[in-house]
Length: 293
Image (cartoon, rainbow, N blue to C red; front, top):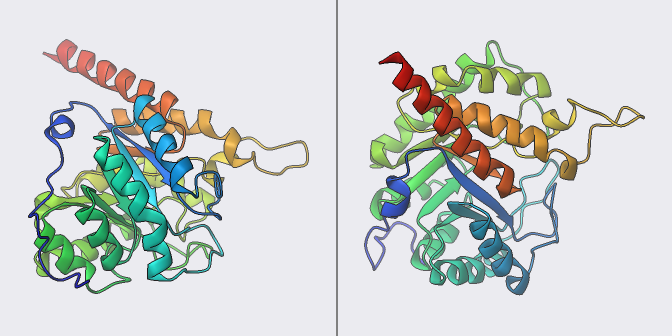
């Protein structure tokens, strides 16, 4: 499979049902892996994953993000064929059921196969830095592309001057590279990469200053769900951060605040709370605009 050639069926635009939604979107996470940090092994077979994806959609997810390779700290890379074997049956099954599907991958070959089986978004935690063929594929496919900020391995927090300024600059560099490769600006969504090469304290300014990241001129996707910096807000009696499965309330709070601050989409494990939160934020901000008139 040549990831640089155009797709046989032409571009797969974002469904009109999503582009017309006047609120923050909700992306449900579907990890078809045995080793993801929060839910590894729960949905690692198509006969489990497809019903799970349909359930997330029924609970209010606008998009289902299917990932076949864990990016948790310390995860070992798998081969491309293994990633394809995990992802493609699930992408195809959900797309056939009418679900808007995103594929979470850094490989152009996996992204292309997913697009050919019905995916409409590519979500790349490397923003095209891992696979040089990714930018060409996205340019030829014409699909929505989520470019996330990272500095390589997510298990080694880096040093930052001002984290928001640094992340904005580095995302801007990736955007420039993608545009130079032929990707169109209207295809791009940016993700500040919460938890990726960032200490717990470095994540909060990125959330509190979303307006500065929005100043880059692109929609923002926020992926705070169940991450360690949320677990650290409350800890067990032994001082250990709350387990990932107990971080959904904090995640929902982030969803509400991010949506009110203008995020395009939130990426979450538990959909129901965030589906309510984005609607509350939309009603809240709409009322504020009316009062200002």
